Image 1: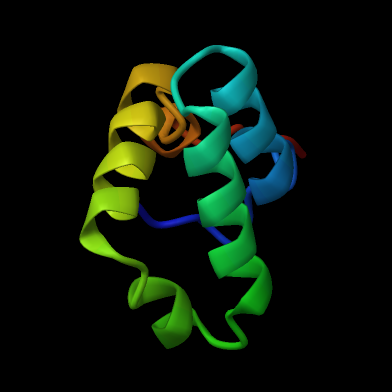
Image 2 (image 1 turned 180 degrees about the vertical axis):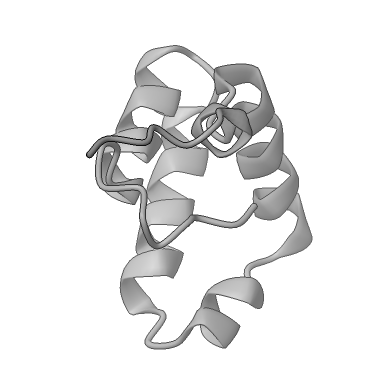
Length: 78
């Protein structure tokens, strides 16, 4: 899963909490992912997350349609 740098509407921690609240992540998965990301100091460190946690996070992301804003055409305002 890639978190776009321009996505200010839904911060990653809020999204992780929402995944747990919707039952898409267990409390243990939520805690493990949150702890991993909290300890990571670089994107590379986050990418080193154990595969089982990545699979859980990616599935929850798909089910929540987290990337929907990336598929929407840009809003042009003048």
